[in-house]
Amino acid sequence: MTSNLPRGARSEVLQRFFSGLTEYTFTSRLGVADPPLIDYLATMLVKFVRTDAIYGLRTPTGERLSQVADMLAEAQTRQGSARRRVHRHIGDFTLFWTGLYPEVAQRLQKDRKDSLIDYQDQGKRNYLIASRLPADQQSAPDDVLERLSNQFDLCVYGLGELRKQWEDRNGEDDAPLLLG
Image (cartoon, rainbow, N blue to C red; front, top):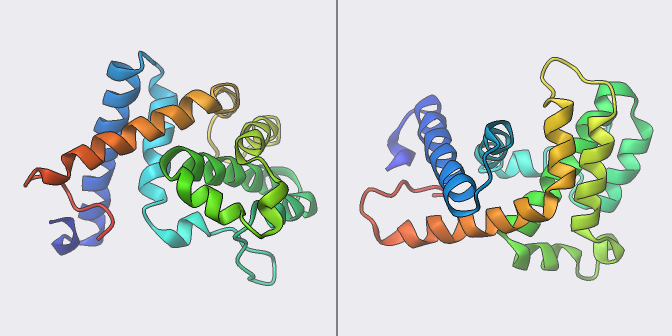
């Protein structure tokens, strides 16, 4: 069980699990042979296992941003690579929810500012914007962000298939406990 491992070891187990599952799903099941894109998705999944990373975007005063509408407004206040990070986060946020948990994405949008926002359109748009803004050393490559924009719908579908794969593993004794 991964919860008994030290934090670094848990991250390594999760990285291996998501890397293998993402590679299998995208390469073998969908025929997508794009290692940088697949690596990006696996890393995003490991990062977003932690709720504080999903909702990690904050205003300069420390207010946590949980709605895409607020994230878009915050992006307009930032410059350079800081703005790129916000747009990338919006892409990741919308991809994560629409791909893995579309039922949650619908709840996130109901009766909130986000009710008028199409998460898939915003994901595509924000990855493209991020790909064209100045990068810092920790930034994803421009071409990967652009491919995420261009192939957003495929990535949403692929993450849905990935979820089915890990849910199918629930009966296996050696399946790692992901969110426990």
